[in-house]
Length: 108
Image 1 (cartoon, rainbow, N blue to C red):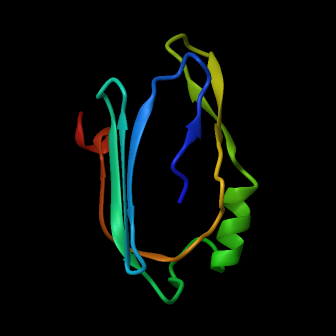
Image 2 (image 1 turned 90 degrees about the vertical axis):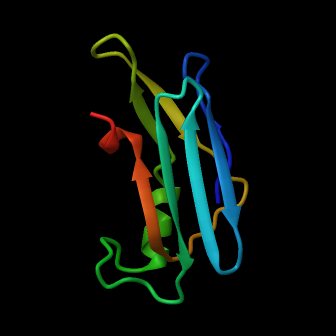
């Protein structure tokens, strides 16, 4: 699991709480200003879901590993800043999700 994000000097910092065992995984992200929270947890799965948008764990891994750059909008319309996800050790496993929450969808 990735535990560190690289942000420009203008981004708000976020805290990531990661709990990973051989059987389960839980990740919670809280924005530094308290405005956003995302949580996902579940059990490590032996098989890959047939409902997945990726054909295999390897395909999903290649997709995300090669797309570590993204953009975040700023307070001024049309202004964006780059973000980069950096992982010391890249590894992908299937996860059977038990719980998922996002303040983006819960807070009108």
